[in-house]
Amino acid sequence: MPACTRPAEAPPAVISAPIVVKVKDTPPAELLGCADRPEGLPEDPALIAQIPTRIRAGIIRLARAFAANADHLDRLINWNTPAACPSPKG
Image (cartoon, rainbow, N blue to C red; front, side, top):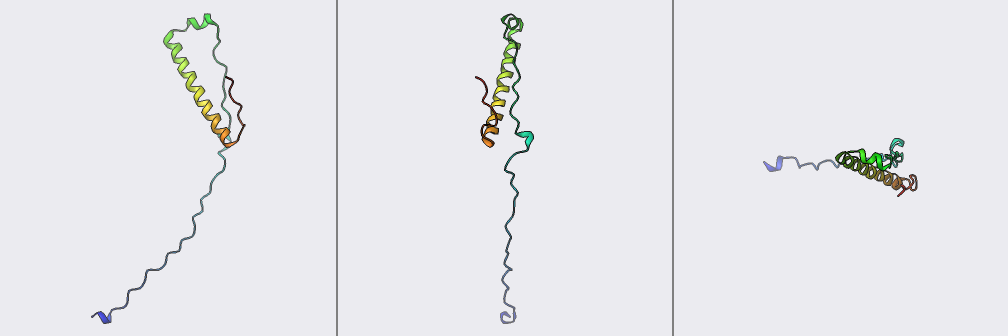
C-alpha cells in the first residue's frame, strides 16, 4: 500500500571542514649546502700519458657527471635562495 509508506528522508548534508596541509617553505638545512668541487687530477702531461686510454676516458666521464650533478645542485639551491652558491669557475 503506497499510502502507508513513510516518505523517503533526504540524506544528511555532508559538510566537510577544509583540510589543512602543512607546507614547508624551505628544504632542510643539510640539503641547502652548495656542492663541494674538489681539485681535479694534476695536469702534468707526463702523468696523464701514463693512464691507460680506457681508464682515462672513464675518469673523464665520471668527472663530467660529477660536474653536471654539482651544477644541478647549485642551481636548485640558488633557485630557493638566490646567490647562495657561487657560480663555478669556467
